[in-house]
Length: 303
Image 1: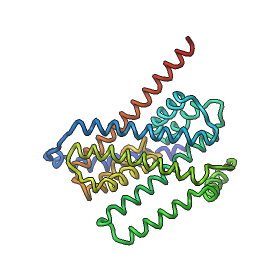
Image 2: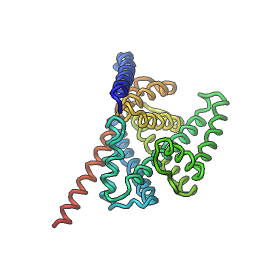
Image 3: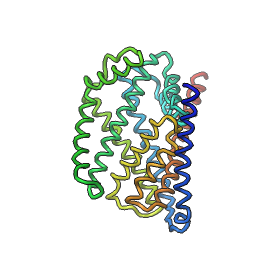
């Protein structure tokens, strides 16, 4: 990574944080005067829904990794998976792959990278599908051509994840970076199963955010899919934005830009900050729990 790129990355990150900070500052007066509910039980519920979402994602990873003959004891795999989630907070996200490689010692690093890459691609595909359904569920906010375009894009996504086409696209990328091509990938049926699984993960994350918003002020359930679509797509954009650790600032900026169209700005601002805290807390809880279980298991084995 060149020094110039590092400078650009930090400049972009600073610009995003300044923009988000300015937006919050501009609305400080309205936030102070807004009458929030602060329902603690909904916040606790949101935390456990986030935990459930990450566990569901872990189950999908276990099945997907085994398709590439990557097998590790459940506790080792869990520790690697949840600690690797903290790798998102390292600029460039390289920590996510490196920690997983450490958990699968003795296995092909290329297979680990490919499985992790496929997981991310299918997550993005699921996010796109959720976004499209979110757009279709909020038809009153969009012109008809956007709805029709969403249906076309949905069909295109289903075509692009068809294994023969998917392999051609991925192998062209590997050719550019001078890496050996992938010879096989999960069948179309299994690929669709993974996408459906990641859609479930997206809905769980969306439910967590929806509960957070409702803990501050009542929000109609009719907006659930739209809220989920915006929240999850903002999270994915933040994840693939390499200059922002864990998408900090990027995700919050997208939420604060779009959601005030249907929810009051004070609720969106406080909700975006609160869900960030809950998400980080759930990641730390799972990483800490599986790291502790891994240590206890090793100590027991040594005895």
